[in-house]
Length: 279
View 1 (cartoon, rainbow, N blue to C red):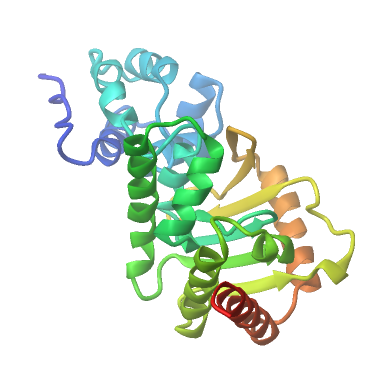
View 2 (tube, rainbow, N blue to C red):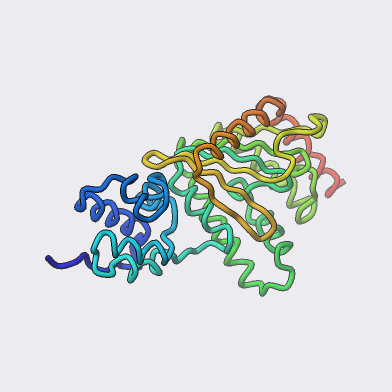
């Protein structure tokens, strides 16, 4: 029987690779858990590969070809599916969120990517790499703006963001940029496209003081949590870890201002930035 054709890199390589993985697994009459055991990973890991929410690494492609007897298909096509338009190392989260049905995020120090304006994103990326060529910065900004097109859909994904007050008061890119950025967040909130709450400085110590947090739910795969640090990021699908971090997020929501009070604070700060820039 002839093997599957190689993927066309001009289409959606990761989705096609995931579909072929599901087809090959079912042809062998293996469940996701059974295939995962042979690769020493969880069944949810296999599910994420099949839905395209997790990138297939070369080492797993080789093992899949052996276990599923696919004549090197996954090994050959793994590189095509790994190509990304997003900057390292945050591409793993960007590509996972494109498949998510719900995203819950806590941002301690900056407005998160899906809520950024081009000017704000440009300032953030320039701060990340002060010596990068201008064309590189623009490529990164373009990639971030493409991510934001997720919000073109009126209801999906559900996006719920808890913003630390420090992120609103950190002057990123100048006062004009901050005024525009906060007005953009307020507009999304007023249009009921996102849920935004502010964790005020007066809340004091809280459960996520050590860093940023992003929880993602999927229709056909197990939920993921994403941890982000300085020039690093990591996805985790361990159910106990995801459950623990979901509880942390619930605590943040409980300590945050209501949506109405949060919106009022964001708009007040936006006006302060605008007036101070143009007295």
